[in-house]
Length: 281
Ligand SMILES: CC/C=C\C/C=C\CCCC/C=C/C(=O)SCCNC(=O)CCNC(=O)[C@H](O)C(C)(C)COP(=O)(O)OP(=O)(O)OC[C@H]1O[C@@H](n2cnc3c(N)ncnc32)[C@H](O)[C@@H]1OP(=O)(O)O
Image 1: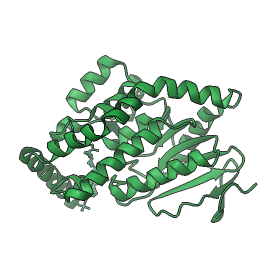
Image 2: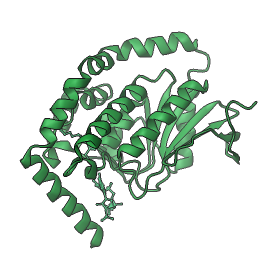
Image 3: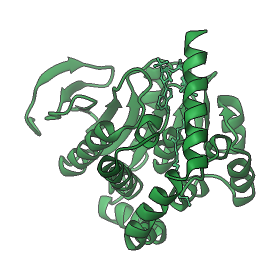
Image 4: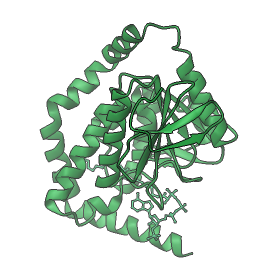
């Protein structure tokens, strides 16, 4: 059955995959007709840096999945080695004063939509997932990661501070003591370390297997009443969601104040340079 404007048909392991009406370029949504599960793929070369455009497209795609009665959402990346490099530092370094407001507001929107999504969510983490990448992954209910990559909230290593709601997602996955230590250290975990600490749920040997494992997780809800499941999830997540809803404006001002500090700007500049030098070597 056609469930939305169909742009193309692409066969996949589990069934016929219909590409939905994403008019956006940096994300795609494909719904498997057999399982009813939507796969949302980030596609912003080179590293899926979360800039304003990718955040807007993510918002639109999450909204689309919410609206098209999908059975679940799997978040993944088209890049074979990077899930997401986190926030695009170029949005925060020497920022344009209007754009950076829109940027942070769009990031808040993405978190509220993903962490508060009414459908079961899973992340197929098929590459490195620092900072904002880890935020996306930990906003989902289940995580499957490929070997030999890294994940974590490394903000303190950059001389910046993860906002409270980044910490909320992290704390919904890790025990408090582990989360506190990792956040303070800005620690990046290897896939194997992430599994042993509980930051991810499973390891997969390929992206296809990761997608299958995520689909299996979503399938565990097949016999659960969808309304009861979704209200239960929303009640469990309500405190953190409501806190950001209530403090959105202050959170934005806090971010703007902090990011515009000369010491923070200097640190971001040095970090960007080090990334560029690394890329040249
Ligand atoms: C009370 C407090 C209130 C407010 C707080 C204030 C501030 C709030 C902070 C908000 C929280 C911040 C969250 C973040 O997400 S910050 C971003 C953190 N990300 C990282 O540290 C990742 C950096 N990147 C890497 O480690 C590697 O690039 C990666 C992802 C492992 C991939 O490695 P590799 O495949 O080798 O690719 P390259 O390193 O060569 O990179 C290719 C290319 O991309 C550029 N790049 C990489 N990451 C970013 C990025 N995050 N932003 C912008 N650009 C990035 C890199 O420079 C290269 O560019 P080039 O032009 O040289 O090709």
